[in-house]
Amino acid sequence: MPFGGRAREVVSVVAEGAIENVGASAVHAMPNVTTEVGPGGGDVALTWPEPVKGRVQVTARVDRPI
Image (cartoon, rainbow, N blue to C red; front, top):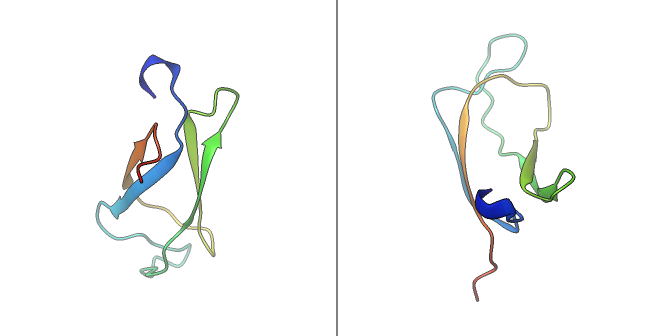
């Protein structure tokens, strides 16, 4: 995160193409998001219901809007 900020809120997770499991079948489940991960709290962890591969874009914020 810029200026050492903490990733306090995730606004979106968007797949870039198919998210696939080990059998190369598409996975349509959404991941759980854990914010403020890592030593400085600037990372985000995505937890899927099964092992997957693919690419996603994550938009995170350093504030918590009302």
